[in-house]
Length: 131
Image 1 (tube, helix red, strand yellow):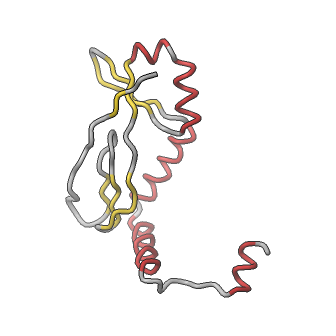
Image 2 (cartoon, helix red, strand yellow; image 1 turned 90 degrees about the horizontal axis):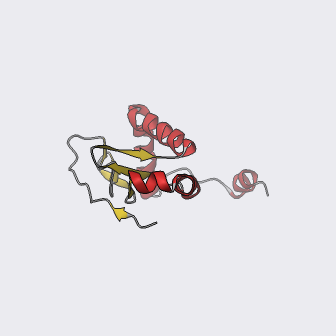
């Protein structure tokens, strides 16, 4: 099934905090001004090809964990995503919208980058790993 690649979507952070660039296309997630994730480009298919290959296309979306943009000639496009991936996206959005969680993540990235974070002892590591 041939699929076109979506165009790169870019934007600049408008405020300090979290900025997500692009829902379709390549995107970057910035956490307090630091890039923390780069997303992939979404595949696109026509509604006719989607309808003709419904079963295999849905199986592919589920097994690859990649959303698929379906375009229509006389209307807006829609996105097909597995239920598991949609639930994961909802959890991510919840975290991204929670300022306290985002600050904790940012602080954790800072301590990790500067190697000043928590360092368990050998005994604690054995307990954590179950050895």
